Image 1 (tube, rainbow, N blue to C red):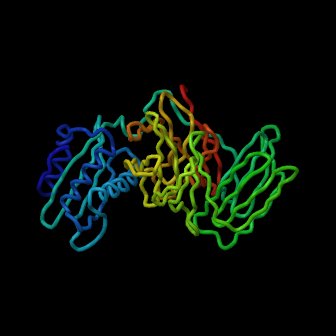
Image 2 (cartoon, one colour):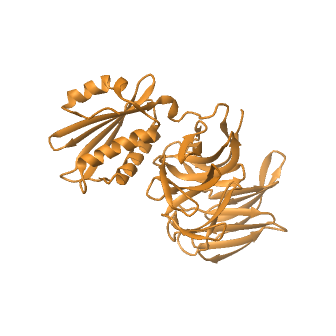
Image 3 (tube, helix red, strand yellow):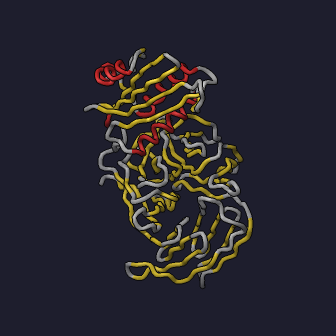
Amino acid sequence: MIAAVNGRRAAWAALLLWAAPLASAAENFDGAVRELAAKAALLAGAGTPISIACRNASSLDSADVARLRATFENLLRQAGGHAGQGAAAVEVSLTLSENATDYLLVEEARKGDERMVWIAAWKRAAAGQPAVAGVGLEKKLAWEQEEQILDLAISGDTMLVLAPSRITLLARHEDRWEQRQTVRLTPPGPWPRDLRGRLRLSAPRFEALLPGLACQGAIEPELSLDCRPGDQPWMLASGSRALLAANFAPGRNYFDGRVVTQTGAARSAPPFFSAASVEDRASTYWLLALADGHAELFDNNFNALAPLPSWGSDLAGIDGRCGAATQVLATRASDGNEPDAIQSWAVADRTAGPLTAPILFPGPVTALWTSGPDSALAVIRNLASGRYEAYVVTLACGS
């Protein structure tokens, strides 16, 4: 990082052109953002709101800019500052740029008549590039339909699809799936906005959970279902490594933070959208995509350890191993109205690094669940057709 510079906009422009070779590169994106957030918090002082504007002058896309802003706000809070508006607010402008070797993050902060400029840089190879050569994600379309897909489960030649109004049983016929039977769902009241649901199939029995509704059913000799009002915990699997029972917040689309580990220990965490377990040096950790918009690493007792890249709200753990790393699949930060992507990350020394390049989808990811030890189910809303599509996502090693 370089020293701050006082001056007018002309000085900022000159600094942008000439300072990059002088700036020492951070280890990664988060390291660069962390230092600039700390400088803004120090300049503002306690209790002073900080207004934030972002501009992208790089080859990175809008999702990376969204991630930049979310990460900056999160790290700003950790440094003692807070984002907000007000007559006495410190104005911060963040510009994302690049040169041949580095990404550059320029922070221009204004407090009254005082203007400060800082620049942070990190190597371009560290931003979103595969960490392991020959490793990639593969996706395969499993099913599509007009109604929203909440979850989908496959066992052999049988598929169950959970939607807001029904559960559908399908059977494989040659190379396609054919509908066999449908049962209707009767919600205990109006479904909450951004409805989520979970389906667990252990043929011939299955379980379907929705907010305020718990269903038990069977697929043989025919599809049957018994649903009752209830708020029982949802079981969140992370590959074959760990299970977590989590209470879904009534009327919301996230978990309220009350969890029970597979050892039976009751723990408390901040409210979160999704969770994934990872292993690092014989220790097991939990990654949570928190309801406040950032991701955090927790130990087995759910003590917070470290912030992580600002992913989207959906995480899933899988067993697929390439080298010594365990993986978590994560969506990218987006506004929910643009094409999305899923990327595999490895966690080492309490830091997340990209393991694969992102795999792109033709719309926002509306659900991401671990579907097996080495696979995840991703549901997207296709922006072109408006239909919902369910994909099985797996990690390919040595491809």
